[in-house]
Length: 391
Ligand SMILES: Cc1cc2nc3c(=O)[nH]c(=O)nc-3n(C[C@H](O)[C@H](O)[C@H](O)COP(=O)(O)OP(=O)(O)OC[C@H]3O[C@@H](n4cnc5c(N)ncnc54)[C@H](O)[C@@H]3O)c2cc1C
Image (cartoon, rainbow, N blue to C red; front, side):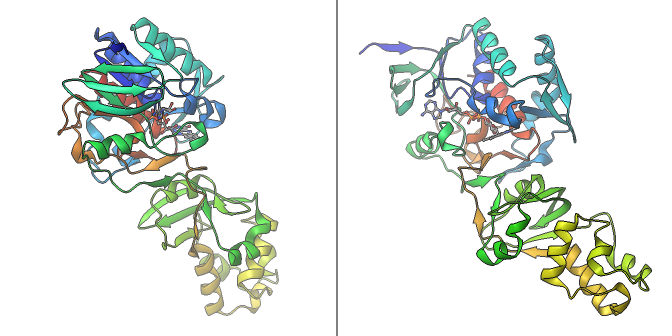
């Protein structure tokens, strides 16, 4: 069988692989980008409700989880949100900030995939779709066994992402290649994923499915202030998705339902009020939520009938509601995989393996996971750019 010879083979035409291919191609390297799906950039297309939250104006190393918090700094510093914005402005693509620095395209994520394809063509990159890589051999060069034949290269880039959304084409090949070459992989788990609660919780709060509340959610000393959303399986919403990346089985999650106020002081100030507790609290919450919450936790009476100790308990429950999730909705619903190729194994400058020269890891496959809000794409662009300068 004829072997297709290239300087650089990149497995996975997602955000990271596309960026790396463009950069390597611009340097005159002969690049092939292998993608097992029939379309490139599938996750870009579905992200951000079809508008792709492609970066975050405030993206910085503090927005990432990794066993080595310093690892991501070098790549993020060399390809910043401003660099990506320059690229899309060059192509006349319009975008807007939704909130908290999160940038979305005005029209559709399709535009960015078309842009990246155009840049690949200009850089002479060969994109091969329906080309799943199944096995790697390392002789003098790398040999890549695929559905479309055998490829060989000096530099092999693994850009196959994590395990989230298997029906979109996620595979475990990044971890299998790591195992083959004896590279360490940190424990992996679904991240940015809704939390599932037990039957007892659902029998009490399941009817609140669809209710959303501005809250502060805390787990393991990390906190996020955004909305939480009750679902028919438990809890979701941006604050819960964020905390899920830190959550481990057995951890409880603490929710401050009134992060802007001090309920004990508020109740003290209204200690003579004849209003019933649930009606009084309805000024802060939807009636549907607060009636249920009061019914579950408090004996509902007019405010003046509560003594100081009761008010402290009510405030404590609202500000420090402890929920013990039973699990997560898993990779089927996770936006990312937390963990991945141990960053000790790769150079933060080039993304090349320290043990296996010529083998590179980029994007979500690496143990660098961003917060919600455009940070995961920023890491994909930045790590792809970094490797693209050296492959
Ligand atoms: C529903 C959803 C919404 C999201 N929204 C956002 C968002 O708005 N903003 C944000 O920053 N992040 C978002 N993310 C996360 C973001 O999509 C990922 O972090 C990012 O796509 C990772 O890029 P990557 O290139 O490393 O991997 P991927 O995008 O996963 O690309 C990997 C590619 O490799 C291919 N592949 C896998 N195995 C093989 C194989 N054996 N052979 C050949 N090809 C293979 C896959 O088909 C895929 O195309 C979202 C994720 C999901 C699931």
